[in-house]
Structure formats: structure tokens, C-alpha cells
Image (tube, rainbow, N blue to C red; front, top):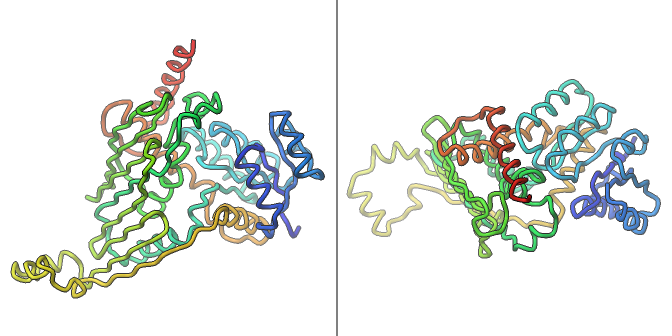
Length: 384
């Protein structure tokens, strides 16, 4: 096998984009094996764009067809774990979309089953892990360039969505259909990057607004305090109602600071000696000179790097890496088992707001599911 035959489950916006990337030759080691969608109307679209590609209305039929070596799950979030398990059961490699699921209990089932199939490739579409900027940031942290982390701040409010976005599908922005709002739809990449780069928080305390500025049942505004358990703290802010949104990620260490602006520019300031040593050695007179416009270059070096982003390049990089793991045992950039961490963080943020108190990670899975089911029941009563 020189190319992986990918089955695309869900021929909507995302699935259609992936099919286009492959058809254009942007994923060198992959070809379209089959397309699948429960909407019969999609067959005509698929036949016109991809006339020689098999089309299925039932994903199980596609898995059993022999037409595909692997699948990607471009479907509502609740279905990702189920489809991942059914694929692996049939010895079909699985690339699940983000998030890995809605709640950790179902994601854990997927991870545990995947462990029984170590010969198969199980990945997740965390395309931002292939972003050179965030790879650079992670390398700086891992190398200890800015020392131990003291504080993280990420404000990511560039997810503006008008009411029409939510009105286009009955399942969208519902507890039953989508399992949440901005935390499970728009921000999973940032939740993954946050823990991938900085570590998993030990506790969270959140202030979450549901239907704050949009006519929806789920969250459209989130402010969360993070406690890493070692004295380090963080703040994570996201929303879908800021048309003038901000994307700024700061990581303060005891030997420097990283600032990421708009996911395009990273500024690294490396102290020439740790902050604690500066505190011990610097006199009030020296501090006064610095405050009055002194030469800050005496205490730190600055590096600024700007990155260009090409639409689809990060998605295709994940797909190419996924196929490379299947064909040549290339190390996975985004192992599927990592998907549980972002889901766990989202669950903790939800649960903290529902209970009105700080919660520890990992959260009580049964408690979270019980509270989620209450939300679903309340939603159904409102619809009736």
C-alpha cells in the first residue's frame, strides 16, 4: 500500500473540505476511498464532484465494504467515540474529529478499546499541533527557556458567530445535539494546546454564561481560573459574541515570558538571570533607573517570530502524518488518546459553573454525566 484509502463519514462542510484537499493532491499519501452521509441529497453532490467514488448512507456499510483503510469522523460530537470504536473493531484505522467526544466517560471507552488494537492507527484532528508557531512555543517551554511556569493567560474571542449560524441546524448549540457551545465547538483546539503546552490544571473555577448574547441553550461566554497545583495559575476566556475578537496567549515563567498574538506572531523575552535572582540582587536605585526608561536589554533578550498560515495546511499535515503512521510507522503528532484531556478540561469548566464552585480534575464522570442529562431534559421540556 502506497496510499491510504480514506473514508469520510459526514459529507458536509468539513468532510467536503477534506475530500477537496485529497482530490487536489494536497495529501500525498492518501486518496478518497469512499464517502458517507445519512442525507440522501448528498449523494447527488458527491456523484457530481467525485463520480468514481463509492457513496454510502450508512457508515457501518462503508466500514464493511472493503473500500477504505481508514476513516475520519466529520459528524456531531456525540458520535465520535462510537464511530471510532466501530471502525477499530473492523480493523479500520480511525481519525476522529475534535473534540474526541462530549464527556470523558465515552472518550475513555474509545481510548480503552483503542488500546486493545495497538496495531491500528488512532489519531485526532488537532490540526493546531502542526502549527509551527505552537510547536515553537512548546519547544521553548519543554526546553526550560523561560523556566517554570508561573501564570498562563489566553483570551480567544475571535469566534464571532451571528444568530443565523446557530439557526441553520436544529442540533447546533444544543445540549442533546452538540453537547455544549463554544467549549465543544470552537475552542477545543485552544483547550488542547493549553494543556499540551502548559500541562493539565489540577483545579478550575469558572463563570460561564449560557445564551448570554445569542438565543441558544448552551454557553457563548466563558471565563475560567486555572490552578496548576504548584502555585501557578491561569485564566482562559472565550466567547462567540465579540465581533472585534482578540487572540492573545501569554505564558509567564520565572526566567522569561512568551506572548502569542493572533496565532501569527510570537514574542519571546528571555531573562538573563531568573526573576528571583534579580529580586535578590537589584537595589531600589537600580529599579528606579529601569522604571525611568533604563536599558531593559540589560536584563533580557527579545526574539520576535512571525508565521504565515495557509488555509488547510494544518489539516492536511495531520492527515499526511496520520497516513504516514499507517504506512511507515511515522510518530503521530496527535495521538487519539490525547483527545480526552481537552474534553476533561471542558467538562470541568462546565461542571464548575453548574455547581457554582471550584472543581478538581479529573472530574467525577458520573456526576458530570448526570448534570449533563439534566440539561438535556430541561432543554426538551423547553422545546415542548
